[in-house]
Length: 326
View (cartoon, rainbow, N blue to C red):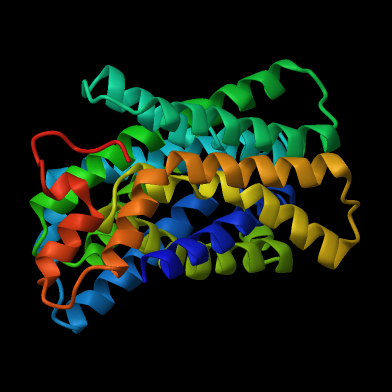
């Protein structure tokens, strides 16, 4: 189930950068469209959880979920949506691939956790692969807005890294709650904060929002990108560790290249193949310990309990005072 959920996250998130770009290029206000996406998706998921008896509306009163939403949804996506007005979706994907590296840096610098050298090396190898894959096909116009857009994506990834680490603490604190419900509430808070930002900075045009490109982009991002993709991501953080789910940022560029080649006839060169191989190698290196634990779990004798198996798959359960970097 972990590998299936991870594969779906990579596939879904690999297409969302282009979907955001389509909506923004069609004239959708970035903050307002992002606010609709996350607030609507979070509301529908929370209502479903309450209806199934898996959550209560009292979760809306938890300040921990407000902080998670401010970091993981508002901080990450308000900057990304705004930046894609001035940078290409490919360059946004490249810059977003710094997420796992920032998570490791935060773990080692702020949380004083020791990261294996192979993890840091894997992040560098994976990011190099992303550059090999995307940069040769980018046409960059150097301008102040372009530089500000790139910086905005990187600032968003800092929020993403902090939110991912903090969400691990939240899922541990609320371990009796459904990860789907926790994700729904944090998306609602992130969407609400973006509504406030939109009301202060934008003037949405109803005609533009109802156009086919904008409506199609919003529908896809709300249902597939947020309701399905972010729920699976939040579940993976709860079941594994913050770094493993975040490595989708290395897998999404190869998916984008494959989709472009398959549906739009975009060329694939030897540099593209080299980039894909480098990305996969870096991802495996970053998650080598996690993969070993999952393989070990499959070989465990039948007599072990589910708790024992979960502990073997997630070493952080064995040492809660020091969360593992892998």
